Length: 261
Image (cartoon, rainbow, N blue to C red; front, side, top):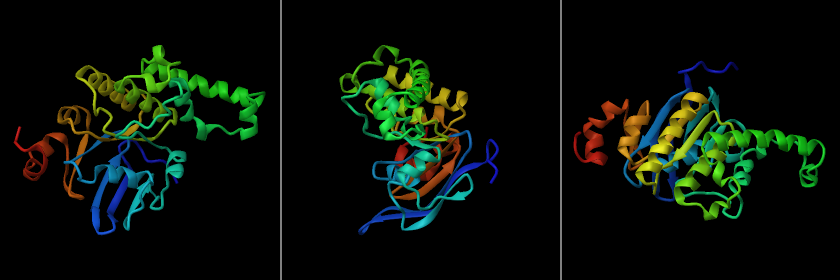
């Protein structure tokens, strides 16, 4: 199957419904993500945003609906399969190895791309050492890109929250994703940290050509970064359009924004 051209649909969710017992997290949600865009997913707390990302990368399996990635049916996605096929993820709550350094955390993002067996990697000799050197160069480039050279040998548990978020972004980038899922990457950041993260997200999109799906509560960030916005409320899609149109949508204002801008 040929790869889609820039701007074509990279991922589509079609009629996704997800329930936990008697609780409906998502109800008949459909939208697509175009290759090369930044696609925002917004809505009030409990709207189903994180559940949707969990469906996309296989943490949750919906009771109904389909997922198509690069035109293929990936409805039975699981996280390892998603990672091997070019989908990387960051989390609302930082999920790093706190006792490991920044460099070592980023190296874990290269694990699926290492082909030498466990014994070779344990010995760190010969072919395994050659392979590690190649992957370490990739990680060092990411460290330079994210401007975190000064913390490369620092255990991430000792870093302030904003830098931990940046390290988590770096680990996802180390996987060389085609689709990057960012779950509230700016939560808990001050203004300067948000500005830095916005800059990195834009540069990842433009320089690397990475398609991005972004959950974010800061509407200024959403309006500035995203090409299109899908809005969820109580697990249902209530709007799907360019940022300016979504900002003026009556249903979105009533459910989430509160006032018309």
